[in-house]
Amino acid sequence: MPEQTQQAIKWALQQTWADAFGQIHQVSSDNAQHLTDKVRDYFNTNNIVYDTFSYDDLIPYLSLSE
Image (cartoon, rainbow, N blue to C red):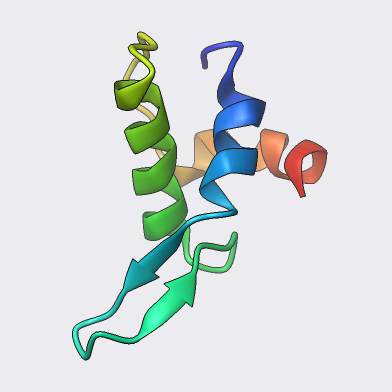
């Protein structure tokens, strides 16, 4: 994982997502897919090179970021 992973998770946990009904939700570690997607968004936006990863790869960083 890139050295910016912890920073990416902190950013992702401050973001929101909209469900199919248009309701806005806070990204949290309780929703693995949205957290993983937002971390990818952070990496892409900031031109950070990363390998394929899943939520399981983020777990060790969660306690450091929450």
